[in-house]
Image (cartoon, rainbow, N blue to C red):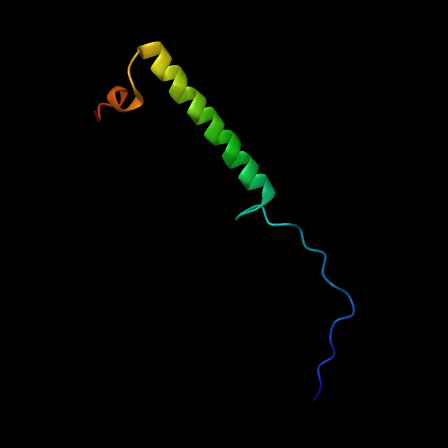
Length: 56
């Protein structure tokens, strides 16, 4: 008994999870927003982030 290979490839959508260009771009933007929020908190309160969180 022999198996014949398929003649066409299935048309699959790119996954929306895992390491892909969209996810990495979104992570980078979220990191930039978090970094700027941290700088703003330090500028407004006059204290560092760790002391603002009560960890220092």
